[in-house]
Image (cartoon, rainbow over all chains, first blue to last red; front, top):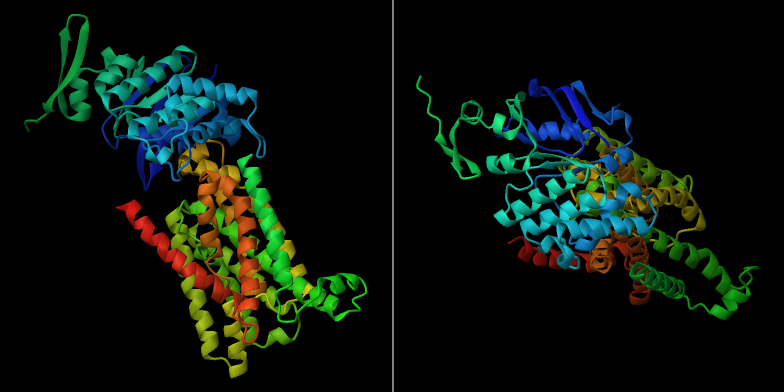
Length: 261
Length: 328
């Protein structure tokens, strides 16, 4: 199973380090949450780990081999990217959108075969988009569109998913659904790196959290270790409290932290 | 299967339109006597058909195919149904190249001066786009570069018209710019065809990339495509096809805009599946337009570019009107 690692990653734009000295390892079977305030460099780190942008320093390895030494097609069979907004510029049918997920496996004029259809059927089942297959993707709601895009990624059978704020604009039903699909993906041997803003989803669904602030990695560990009020106050400028109710514990943002100069 | 039947229907229609165009000139050709004398060229009918009509109809089909294909590719690349092959500035540069040939009176020196001038102009235009928009060219950068290049090329064409030595050269330029495939020879076909062929292969091969691009540039890249490479290929393909088309026919507008748009619903809006049907339908549209100019006004012949614009302009208006509802 493939692991994706970055070491001492540094990305500079306009003389400013957007990501600076971040190291993380994404192993098979885990869901890792990437959290941090807006502008912390989460999306940039994700893009660098996908090979969409070059690192100015450090390196990124996929299955022990430098990412830049993989061909784009080989890479596409290992890494799948779920961008923040699922763009769809043309009124394509959902079934064709999902079929296009097989692109990394097909040569330019090749038609999908039995194995491709199998992968597509599994992706459709996992994301529960059976009823949407004949719909036109531009007419779907945000939650439906996210599920369809996720189905497209799963159809590629790439073991590693990198998702940029996939649940930020979804209703709770779809938020749970997307996160459950991620958990299931990890349970079946894949891995997921997901950028999140909702700390409770991060606590509940992630095996490990990585916290970025101003491009630097400020914490890494299990959700319970990481999501501590003093760290969150430092990083987000927000006061938080853990509230326990029986076997349930949730983290509640209390308000903006007001410093006393 | 649906795609195959669409291709079959379009191919048959192109064939029919080709025959219609071949037999719709002012001189009535008897097909029987023309075919009988085809090899020896010993009948007037055969001579007319072979030396005048055939190159004309071939060029109409080739030019139409180029414009339709380039239009579909550029709409896919820019992800905008209102884009056309003229938007990236190459066609105006090709026109400028040809106008310069007219201006310096080179067109009389050799039959190939005009198409070569046009092709050089197109090549220069494409080089300018890369220079202006840069390697990382975004969609906006490409469009802005195209607008700027278009503006410069048209101003230089105006300059050439302004300083034209004699009224004859001037009317020659103006008539050429209106777009036509009349009075061409097989030599024109043979000079344009190699460039067109290469361009077709490049553009037809970009289907998968254009499909992937439906989900945004970063998604396409994560699906295994090099954005820079693919984008450069498409611009080169558009420069080759449109440059070659404009070099032999002048400006035949609106084909590249209208054709992909009409076909889009028939291919499930898939940019990859749109390419080849657009080439066929482009050929069909220009063949029909060329047959129409010959049938409608045999004496003072309407220019091909005028009739495509007369049909395409209102269509464009309707398109904008309809999209207004989508946007709001």
